[in-house]
Length: 196
Ligand code: MN
Image (tube, rainbow, N blue to C red):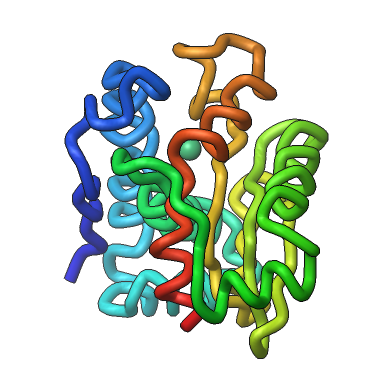
């Protein structure tokens, strides 16, 4: 059973004018799809074949199978990233997540400021996450394909800060992309559902 390319949760043009259909056609259609093809080729005939994506990420991390891990984790990370954005507008989370954010960060604005700083200052390629473990919230920066999943953390929201995520629309201006992600696209509704 091969690992599938998860369908995008919206049309490729749905995030315009913030992120273009052109960016999504490369980012989803070439980069993300490429990780899926490479992983399926790499696991064929191995003990990884038939495992779930999450199990492949966790097991390849423990065994030090770096090539398998890089592709599997990048698939998992991109699956989370597409779901971390919504074309329906940014809506502050209520409920348990809203309360936890106020308790641990003071306000959503304070949390977002810290995540923006983490995304702007991450050197090279990687990801910035809002994750939780046993209910406690945490901002996590990971390099390359690394993912909080391997530490047993729940991934609530993530921004991809590899250059391929923004270069076509923003060139080298990562800060402008990070601002657009949090100000126009962040899907707190899904984060709140996962946290609950
Ligand atoms: Mn990416």
